[in-house]
Length: 295
Image (cartoon, rainbow, N blue to C red; front, side, top):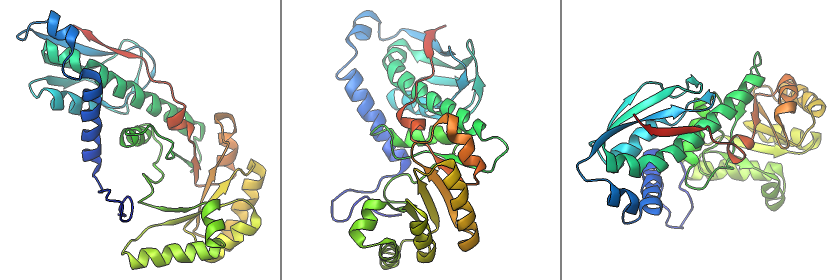
């Protein structure tokens, strides 16, 4: 896997490390040096229990991360899971119960809810989009249009909702877009340079090329792209492009991207593409309504 940046002093972190960093920041910005309300009204020895109450129909996501929230803040909190990630939930469902010091329950409530609502909203949206493609082989992909610091959680939510992850970041796949092509001097030069760089650096990365017309499709095929992204094609043009790629570049994966909505999604899938990338899965999602209530 590639480094985040060459000679920038940025160290590659694991998924678990990034999530732990996020939780550290979440506690710091929300609790600061202490929850004044809770510390002033609740005694240190008070014990209690709360449950996560679902208030809206959707796909549950974030249970495993919620456990990390409680464990990180106070390892004495005991969490009993009743509904797992990926389950279809409805109003009135109880996802889990947490028992322990009341001070800890109250101070972790908002951080946990922010994560659960966000991830469940994304999983629900993804399920809706993927269900729109029922009966087809096409898979919905996410993008890098994620909330800063929450990418690992949001991409995990996409998978929980039945979608697939595109590249996690700039380091795990090569995606040659129009600006790369223009600066490199053409698709052939850009792909060749990418392959050479991977060989020189011991990387085994797939190469995807964004194209805007039939001429660029043929250039990408000739250059040996692993995947071709059809950018802002209509469904009709997409169907024509799919036939061309299958004919002249069999085995090359095909992705549609750009301006695709829920209403037009099915038409692109029926055109025969392998993937459809949808930024709305993460950048325009509504959180799933739920609350953490004393019980």
